[in-house]
Length: 564
Image 1 (tube, one colour):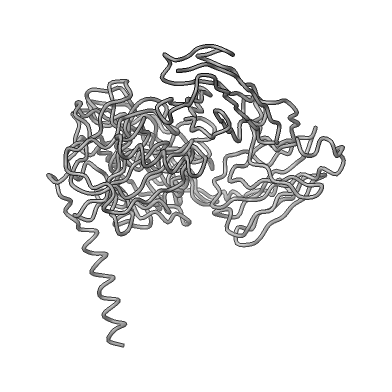
Image 2 (cartoon, one colour; image 1 turned 180 degrees about the vertical axis):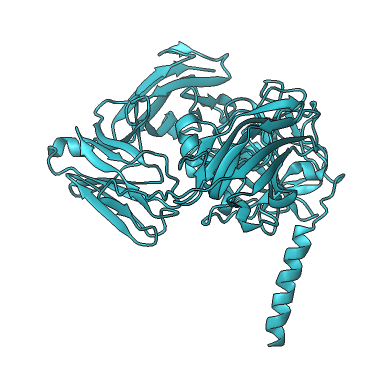
């Protein structure tokens, strides 16, 4: 029993200590020598996740040296097509890990280690590599790699993170002293009021309502008076700017007061990767999917498990009573403390009409249960708790297109979408794939698996899906050499690969029958081999490349060349 209470005490003490952590301001230096300008800030709202670091501008260039910000050792390395691309992790003796993503390359000794692993696996993609702590020790100021544009990066920059090594929770690097010039108040672009139950009204309406407001002076906004009744919530579209860049960055904190009493607060000091998906409940997800702008709610919905919130009263929901007046004040801050406020007066007005949600479809989702529906040759199956709340689902199959609602409802889990392919000839079945149809009517491949007379996929995206047929081989184009050409002066060998239908899945290259490492840039489809990897014997050589798409169509090219 004593051990039990001791464990409880330790857990509570650990939690309190963590929540009151004073992060070391002078321990880490900047990983770049260039002026610190952010293209993206910590906790910024991204697609299905919060931004887990800061994006440091690199003057629009690749190849800038990255310096270890403190003593430590390389604890993890990874090369991936998407996500972080080339990434490096440093563990430090003070209990934190720093992370560097989208690298062009590692410093020479680390690059050699990674290439050795790639040649052993005969794959460009490494998965996670975990060197031993004594393999790559670093001192503060050592060069560890060079900035790039690999992975899902949309331009040259360094993505930089700081994590708690023990918990892997991510922490805003600005808490550790990293800073950029910022004297600009956050900008508020939109204010929305949400009725939160069937009896709630906003200006006599039962729908969410945009509220007009004006900026009276820098950072001070005043909204028009509204009438309301019942339980309502509010939300704003807001962003921040820094002095030396035009990027729309994320804010640090958002709070709301009702008649001078704070009822809502959240900030993005730290969070875990596991909770990041609940960003879809922090924002008005439907509005985002329709208009690509994010409304941040100043109230917490019931299924939201984010740990960002502090000292909420009634989860930030406001109960408007008849005959009473309410003064709402929303306060937005960036990390530096620049502040913008928006004031909204609300008057409680009687409402006698109760709105009832209509059952407009036969497909009712009970969020706590397994739900499965079939239309013609299409079946959709949702595990329990896929949806955050009960809802009605539109589902139809017309002209071979499965319409699975609009992609305006966030999902917590993946569901299974299955097409019956029994009616297709055997010769076509292996080349059929499932495609998601975008708003622009462009079909794109989704990961398709096969069973007898069926193809299926698992996805977290609602919307339109169909079957597509791909019998076209990928295309291969030699870029910087031709057949039977002398290329002794070339440092690299470059080839472009492309597949318009189901997309590239695999590639395998050899010279004189021996596997070679070709770095793949999926943004431009270029494969690059570095001749310094291995010394070639003789002068005549055969380059061979085999490329496969996602349904198994394969193209092969053999190109002889000469090199001393």
